[in-house]
Structures are given as C-alpha cells and as structure tokens.
Length: 60
Image (tube, rainbow, N blue to C red; front, side):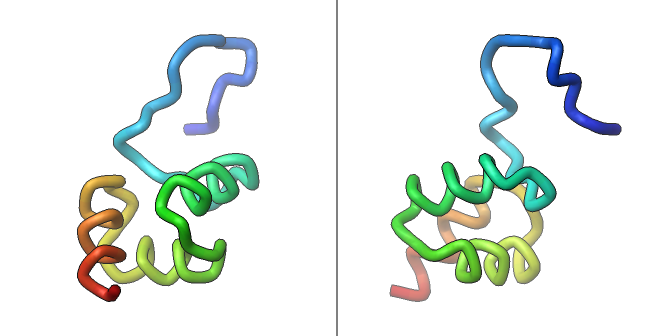
C-alpha cells in the first residue's frame, strides 16, 4: 500500500521505506551512513528501524 501524501502528521518511524527518496535521505542522516550503506542494512535485516540501527552499530 502506498503512502497517502494527503495525510499529514507523524511518519511511521518504526519502518524504513527505500522507495521514498526523502526517507532514504532522512534515515541515512539519522544513522550517519550513506544511502548505499542504509540500503545494504535494510536488505540484510529488513525494514525495521531498530534492527537496522543495531545492525549499523554492530558494523562500526
């Protein structure tokens, strides 16, 4: 199901959508990684933000 752009308010901050450029940009900035590193992490552990964060922290 696509994001409804007409709805305003908080984003679902528990999931990372690689199909939205702004989400890739924002999550990359939050985790201090490149877009490619973020994409690799999501492919490795799924799109759960906590799992991605743990994965990225473990690689440092």
